[in-house]
Length: 74
Length: 464
Image (tube, rainbow over all chains, first blue to last red; front, side, top):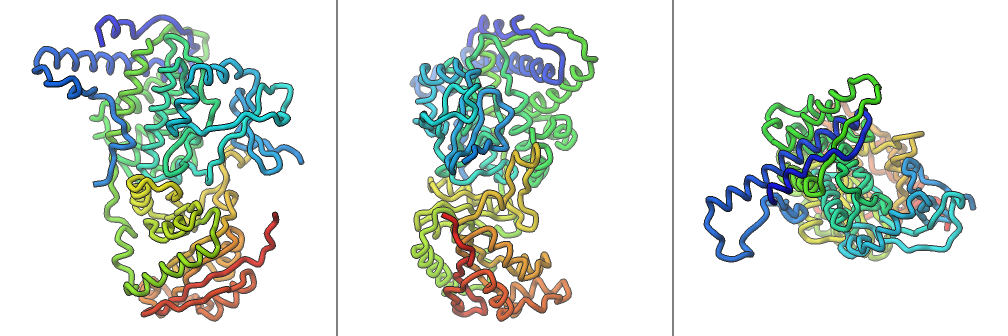
């Protein structure tokens, strides 16, 4: 994700009246900004400090989880 | 015959479910036309149904239930048994949450978004969670936040967090809070250490604060201008996926977890019981069976091998969790483990007490298994034998029931701590009372044991 994409997160587009749902809308935008920023920093950090992986297949997205398979019993 | 509009299906202006002459249909309203058409033209319906994420349906030409508002009538594939989130084990709940997020990600790929993230829209079919509400999608509008975000947090994240961080039994709060657990309540109930989990800190604790902060404002028409890109929305969904996926609960220290090891059966008696159940199921060939007090589902699997669908109920969330993990591991298609306390089974709840159906309303089953069960109901819960007979008469046609006499060591244990006020709890009376409502086809004494296994058939005349 590029910085330009992160900066496009908060856009003045929708209009909502203040009601209990407004808090939910605002917080999700705030979280998305933080999480999106986190992903950016992670990618940035990896690019700078990590060695290039041997093959393309070795790179994984840290946030992706196909959970239905991941929680197998021990 | 008059159409019957389903009690759970009245909120959504996009359409509703109705039943006509025993067949279930969904009316799609004109108001939903463009979204419905886009679901198909975009290829999303095909993608979701082919991967088993959305229940499939056929368009029909039957007369709509409300022709004035109707666009189409569709006939969805039937779910063998409707279950509710307060009946799911931890992993079932977690899988239901994750499939909701997965569907939302796919929907965004196709230019749509989930407008509902209700846990009640997820059901278990062929051993897996599936979305049953075809009308849950709307065309995605650029920069619009996720309208179902609050619902997702209340229906999925809050109960899962409470189950994982506080107590597995807190899923039962959903019986009271039909629209999910209020986030302010979840914040108060969660332990402080949950705040160190960023996903929970933000999506539950801070979310609850934000709700309060804006709800407290007087109802003036102040406006908030805020939006988020699709990229940001995807980042939110992925972070929710990671938060839900990392929550853990492992069954331990359970009441029944090692039941099969501590029981007083000999191997021979256990094998004989299995053999008898298998033989009887081959004879009956039930379409749907309820295994009551199923523990981890050993006997449920014998029924499922005869071809039917089995709902495998147990009061212990750990046993149900183990049962579901086996379903998932072995990719079993016709066993549905669910939590049920038979002394207080799921009631009818919601608007006019018709939105979510009671345990009994979802029956009757073709066959009910009550193995090593009735001594718990009769002695631990003081239910008279006649009441037990009435109960089984209502919930199923065939009955496989095990009588565990007072001389059995397990019953001894139960009677140790209480006065024996159960004079009718003897085999002769048990048979006599059950014979009022059932024909006893078989009564077999289990080897090396005082126990008897019965095959009974209800005297109720089946309506065709």
